Image (cartoon, rainbow, N blue to C red):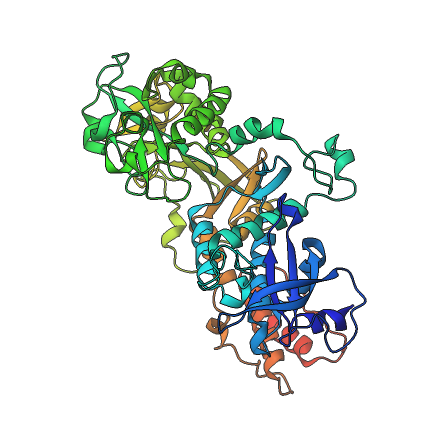
Length: 567
């Protein structure tokens, strides 16, 4: 099979779309117009007559080998990984690059169900982020003419006198990506796993009844418009909602929210969620839903006519995840909704992650400090809480020497918790108490507004400092993290433990001053000298070390004994 594939990758290739998308095919032919290569073809596929456009813009019939998508993928992926050795293999290399891109999107789970124009069930690539769309457009711009040389009108009946018209590059590339997406999930066991043939079986399945369902699934993902919530602060809780209007529109790329820190400081603390609409095709196109409904502003006018219907579909799906959005469904203009403190607290937790998974991002006011960042600090045992100004480890200034018995059997080290608030440093116990005892998610602390779930602060306050075995503490310090109650937290060292960590992870060139002991009657090679220096470093840190070697008379072993005796 490999020799036959190697023969195919030097042919010209073109994609022939189909309906459903999995019905698309790849056609390959020789530069001389034949479908055969250096050896007879005995693999899959069939030979067909195909009309292509030559570089001199003439319609020319060729005999092409036509493969289905699953038959063509091994050829295309191999074509991309090999260097081009023939001028006519550029089209095959291009479709190979397209195949790898489609496989990567599919591996990332970017598949959406849909219904083809003819009413068939069909998977397609999506939703695509802005960076994905840029990659698709860049690849389409690099498509060589030979990769799309099958004319739209093969016989020239529409315009006999005019030049042949070729299909547009980007729609053709998107059709190929969808063809790969519609092929991969349809394994022999898929119908049994899915409970039916729809979106699972290989034969075409007419399901026009699923068109509305597919449109609702696509809404907010890669069709019409995506939604986001911009959380704003109001002056009084419970005041009547204001129209978001053009003055309230914010570009998501410019700010993560609606107000600055100075504006936040002047508010009494009510919350409002403003509905925003984003274009799936243009990450910079964003407008308030109120403006889109009113048709005001250049950004709002750029949305397609069906964007409002798609937005309502996405909003209905989001309201199932988070009921406070339900009032927007009954409003004449789904502009904004007032939020209670409990609802804001929900957004600070898992609700925001659930909405984001459904394509609805939550943007908080810029300048608000959100959330606590816990970390554990490991150090020598201390009778008072580490981190306080008057309880610093007295050995921090003791130079580079390490206290004896730091890692001796049975030794215990302190394991204390610290919580950072933004970039303002660690919280004091009194400040953590204030956050934990607050009745609202918005608290004024250190001359700034802090937005935090009080339950999260109470959980942080409940964490108890303790002592841990020296071996476990050293393992956490060297890896930089530890799993505590099922969650991984950052770990840092202090005092003598930090000096120990620095010595263990330091540059080995610092030990270059260590030479073979004078009592050794042997010449050490470089790798043996490195072993000796490693033994010396471990010994100086009070750690046990064992250097194993299969040679019983290894000079390093003797050198180690001499060095340890101090000879």
